[in-house]
Length: 244
Image (cartoon, rainbow, N blue to C red; front, side, top):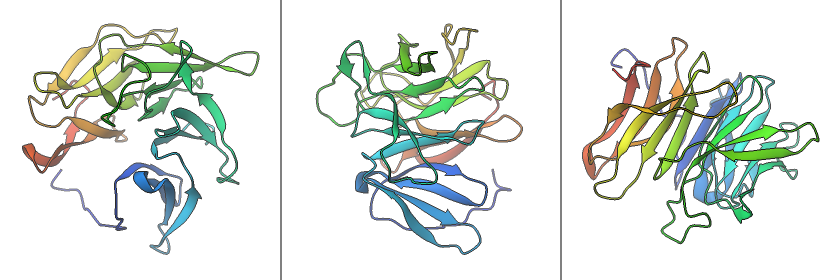
């Protein structure tokens, strides 16, 4: 990635997450402050765009330009009105099996409108749901959303991303517990949205695994991983879809 040019565009006091490009600027979250900012590429300024976000984390646009958000502290996945971002959002999912979600972290939306999202718990507190899994929320004919569990082998899934052809769901398995995997995984996506057995594309050993991911136009995965006190330190990685 030596040919890439990097520029710092804003400074914040706490964790920043979930950057998404809207065509002329960047939306991103200051997670612990429950605030979404918009950086304007023309002016170079960042301004508050949405408040009281429930410690929003991952965000993504669908192919119709609708904005979907993981609100960790609110334990829900929502759709936010771009014209009135501080209005009450549409709830996509906030429970599974009659239990409140743990802490939705990241999400990806396919061309049919199905929302895949991760639901780990990094708070140190007890889980609402015993397992920490990837789910699929699907819009039903009645106007509601149905949530289905699609992974049964994850300990703490974090970043999630669909391949360009939508046949693969990349999942960052990013547990902090000693001896448990920190991997970039590739799950084949079946026609009904369920997932096949994963292939571990990269294993980070005992170093800190991936947090956020995005795709380049050529389909490579760009991922943030590591920390100042774990493994080789904070690094941006670029992976071929094969993991190389």
